[in-house]
Image (cartoon, rainbow, N blue to C red):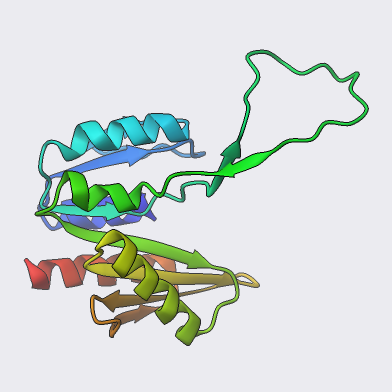
Length: 180
């Protein structure tokens, strides 16, 4: 989704920096500055560094893991163990740090739910608007191969809808053009 949005933004003349995680097909564009990361801590560090540059619009579309291992191992675990228990701990909500570091920015957040109805997406979007100070939230749902997206404003009004990712990216970029 981040790649689609970045591509649409550059077509409209925006200067774009894309923080890109470990994905099968890297984004290739001469007009987009791409910074790669692989792990949660790398993204956290990169966000802090980049946000100091005072971006006008920040679109946090990264699907950041909600949990990490409580303990990591520096080497391969032997296959001889008969039983291994892994403990997970919640990760920080990086989106909640963005407005604190870059308060004047316009923030777009994403909320993905599986098999959610419109009203649940509105509630989830409202939580993200309050907790992170988002100006817009793209609340999307992927259920049985069907994609739906609703873009909510600060007042939890639906300002756009889409039935596929391409349409959601176009709708978001169109909204951002109108608001700027």
